[in-house]
Image (cartoon, helix red, strand yellow):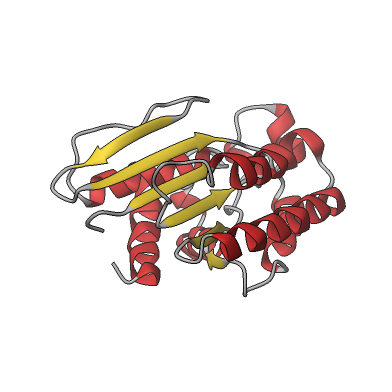
Length: 202
């Protein structure tokens, strides 16, 4: 990780992954909870961790096309997650598939311009309806609907994205590993970070 910049773009899944990375490197820093960007130095690694709160796929598309190329230091990797808000507020898996395809096209374009950039796409988390705290979430974030969203993500081109299997790992861990019916427990994110670092050869 020495000298690298790891950029997390998207929703609360990427924020939780960023928090797990901090734990993995022994940092005492904490992520900014809520809908806010933050940027941190990883101690002893001469590395940076950046998070951009961009919860919808079109937000991530804009960030990739406009914000990432303008950075003074090209990120080593971008980790993106953008499933939950679309599923909760838009509730249209077909539209999501179109938005994800547009994002993948943008990602391929940026990847061609920045050949050292690696792109990781988080799949959707396993959801547990009985644990969700609002009626809106229980209606929108059913396992069936989230699975349809996840299928749209898994259909994105492997030549552009490497997929980080949030869905598979959180589902394998089971309902007891869900913190609130939407987000996995920290132990799942800790495991995902180890998978992520292995994928990146870190």
